[in-house]
Image (cartoon, rainbow, N blue to C red; front, side, top):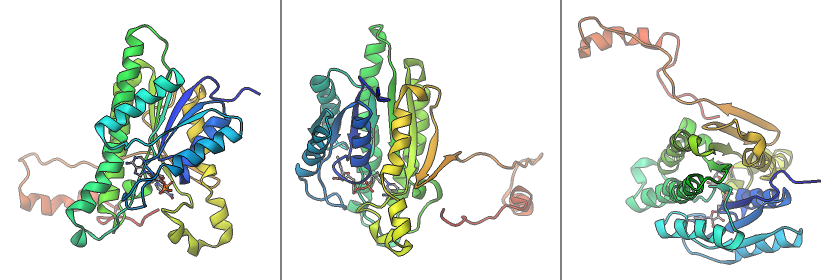
Length: 297
Ligand code: NAD
């Protein structure tokens, strides 16, 4: 049977373990040649190892697929450019970019230091933008040459970026930024034949096993990263030509469609607003809606 991604070349960032590894294996099983990118860092972004990316490349090859390893730092401008060049040089083209690499440095805002803020925002937000920037430039060039383009970017946000998780100011802000970035890139790239979508996954990986351990063995088994990868493979395929600028929560047997911040009420003041007028009318704006953040999830 012909795979969904036969003849395609895909990059998956942070593919040396966890969700990225699972996406890389499935994309390869569906026929894509996969660039397995991973800097091999600790969960906090410290250190680097070549082994995680190399071992996923070996796994793909052992299953009969085609893959190559990249150890570029996706959050570095030159690392991102090298990554996109690597895909084209090694595999002849680029069709799919799955931005997935990530780290965590959780702290309450009042305890967070500058380094923890910068490191997390850098890897997630710049680490999504920089590879996308060079992939988009590549696709635009091919489009200008008259080549048919079916480009795909699949970004990775988090429910923390949708609702805002206490203790994760750096992570939630970066993940919220990735949702906005997805819409911007989708608008910019539509005319060039590139779709850009975003997932907010839930899966047991080294990043989350401490959280999900309390859920019991059945829930842990259901939250296998592989359950998220099916959506990634679909979005990467030609079947998903009509889906762009969208965001999905994906875990276990569940897929949810997200729709973002939008206006739910409006009030006007004929004479122009003053602080006293706002105080008087603010209840009309909220109506039955809560004036506090809702629960997470
Ligand atoms: P993970 O720690 O298992 O994998 C992340 C990988 O990214 C690691 O292998 C790491 O070496 C790599 N990496 C880190 N910095 C990098 C860099 N600068 N360049 C290249 N590679 C780098 O984590 P995971 O749970 O598989 O997370 C994958 C993505 O999914 C992350 O963006 C994470 O925020 C997101 N996410 C995960 C969950 C979940 O439930 N696991 C929930 C929401 C969002």
